[in-house]
Length: 88
Image 1 (tube, rainbow, N blue to C red):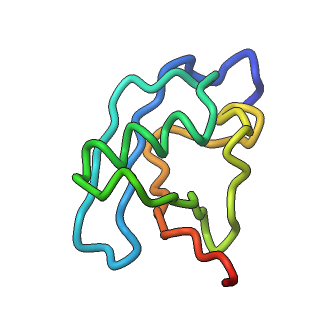
Image 2 (cartoon, rainbow, N blue to C red):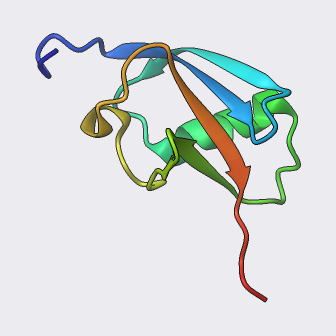
């Protein structure tokens, strides 16, 4: 699918790291950043907002500043949310 034929609004599914909770986000602008989608999903999933979460697609961490369309994220893609772990 070329950029000209990609939908401007897409439906996504985001799940927590255990796969026990899923958020179905509808009509997400393809111009949204990964970080915007993560923030929306954290709210929908009822995850603690004081924690940071990383979006992971097929084992690859996604840059929070990346645009969905630029990454080739298509409709009905499932993205996992995992808590960010920092070395202490």
